Image (cartoon, rainbow, N blue to C red; front, top):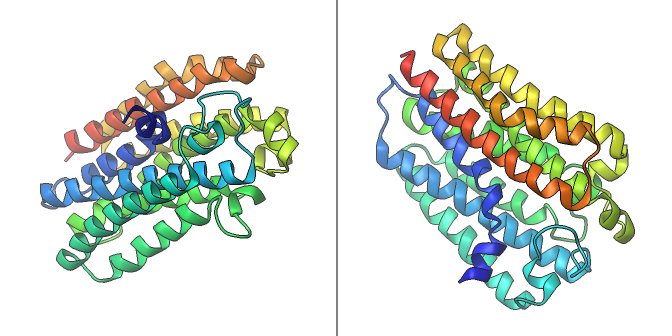
Length: 287
């Protein structure tokens, strides 16, 4: 069990939890249905875990994640699990997401089936398939769209049954914070990714620009979130996320690299959770 928990990459799970919490908070006042919120959370977490397993599988088979990589060992790359086992785990995670999503589609609208299918496909083809878009420098776009806009707006939609400007703004803020997590991860992996030909955005734009991209994503997420205060004043609480974002940003700007970026990854995840919680609380308090 421990290896599967490790393979699920718990530090990345805030990227799935936060958009559901924020999206549900956006819908506060429209009649939140709690079992729908729970199903939305199951969908988001299962998609995140499935994407992580899929990434582990594809990178392990390609030889991208070897035992000498910086950071936590991967299941296939380290030999802790076979490709067949990880492929099965990926299928189970995506099946859980599909089952929960089907229940929501039946209760809300069949159009959610298309959103769910697109999300699963995006998770698989991130590093899977003949031309994985994660290797083309498009991973940040996927994270912003699916773990920002789609997850947040979708979580609000299952209650309010409408897409609002507030949901889009909050989803953009959540998306930037999620992208920050991917950026610092890819910053850490630049040396090994370059060696195996994995052309992430960090590899393409170089270390210096990647560091500034991280700052823009982390700080930009907090600023965008605070703009939700134009409609719901207490949303300004999101700026409290700077408590954990500050040390992470300073470490990145000071040139932390390799293993020194592992704690930054943890602080970035905590920033997501803190900022997301504060934004959600602020949105609810303002109703």
